Image (cartoon, rainbow, N blue to C red; front, top):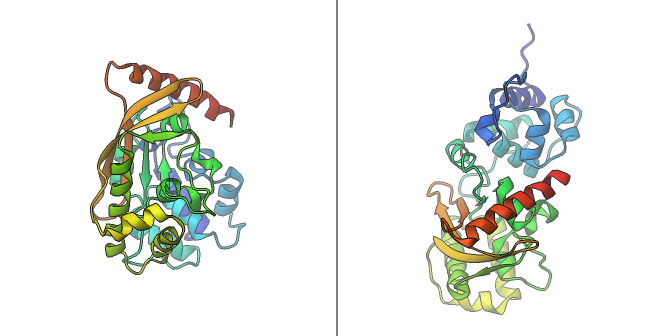
Length: 286
C-alpha cells in the first residue's frame, strides 16, 4: 500500500476530518461527505474551487504564503500542522516573534458558533484576516478589497496612496477621538512585541510619514489596547444601525476578535436583522 504524504493528499485528509458544523455550516441529513466539500473549503479559504482541485491533484506549483495561511485557517490546523503545510509546499513556516494570521483551533471553534452575530478577526497590525457571513452582510464583502488593503490602520489613517477599507459601507465611531487613540496605542504595543516584523514596521513608518494625525498620536507614546466602542453603520436599504463593538484580544497570538451586537429590543436590533437578510441575499448572488 502506497503511503500518501504529498501536499494534496494531506490537504484532502485535513478536509475530510473537518465536519461542516465545526465551521458554522448547518448539519444536513443524508449528506454523503463527512468532512468539508471542496467548494466549502474554497469559500472559507477565499480561493477558487478550481485551485483547490488542482492543489489536491498536485497540478500547481508552489502556493503562496498567503494561500497557505488561508488554508491553515480554513482547515483549523494546529500550529504544528500549519508548519507542516508550509514545509510540504516548499516554504519556510512563519518564524517565531513575527505577526501571525493563524487562528488557533480553539478560537476557530468559538467564532464559528457565533451564529448571526457579525464577527471578524484581525492580526496584531489590524489587518483583517477572517470574517463570517453576517459581517460581510452588514458591513459589505471584504473580498472586494485587496488583502493587504483590508487594514483598519489604513482605513482610519489613510496616506495618499492608501485604498484601505475593512467595511464597504460607511462606519462612524461614537467616540472617534478615543477610537483613534486606542488604535495607535495598540499598534505601539504590537511594535514592542514584534520588533523584527517588517510588515508591521513598514505600516508604522509609512503611516507616520503620510498621515499627520497618526504621526501626532504616535509621538505621544501611549501604549494600550482596544477593548470596546460604539459604531454606526450606514447600510443602504436599511439606514443607520448603531451597534456595540467589542474587541477580544488573544494574549498568545495578539489576534483580535471584533464582534458587533445590537441592544436587545432596540430599533437597531430590528435594523440589524434586516441588514442580515438583505446582505445574505446579496452574498448569495455573488
